[in-house]
Length: 237
Image 1 (cartoon, rainbow, N blue to C red):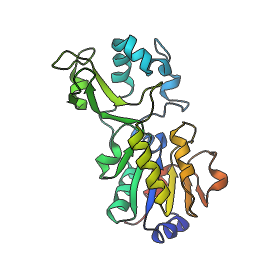
Image 2 (cartoon, rainbow, N blue to C red):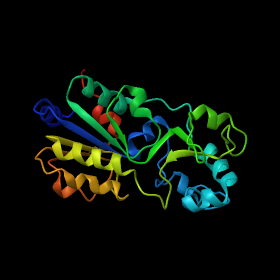
Image 3 (cartoon, rainbow, N blue to C red):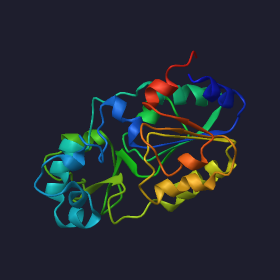
């Protein structure tokens, strides 16, 4: 691990990690906005149209055809970044993980206090009665998943045209406000309102780990360019 990053971590006791799609790309989950991402793959409709609330309500069959084939990565495993963050939480350093990802890999690695801004593919609810269904139910369903009551089962993920969960957003903002160190990694900070959460941090230990420049660069105390798994996962724990 970078010596300065290691020193900052050692000097901190209330670290919050705020991450985006770049945290999961090393697990084989493509970034929607990358050159090889889902936004650049040919499909019957543009992906941003398919994963919108209005499209889901209008054409759930086509939504689920895309969703099952392009947004569920059942074989993905936590990578070095996920494991390093979980280890830091276990050591009492990291108090919260705030993520824009919906894959559940932080929890799979062992992180416990995770705020999922955009929901999770592992949670699904009947739009009629509210009954909960896990990911396996969605995967094993033919066509549109339906509840035992007959209602359509919807993933608990934030679609375009939908707002973020206010409770999750408030708790994430509160955790960042209280932090004595904020590590931002694997995100271009271009998706709002999630990206605006970084503005809640006013401390002096702001670390940015990303392959490309972000709007937060000018405020950062330490900038590390590279893959986040390589940066975080190279420490001796």
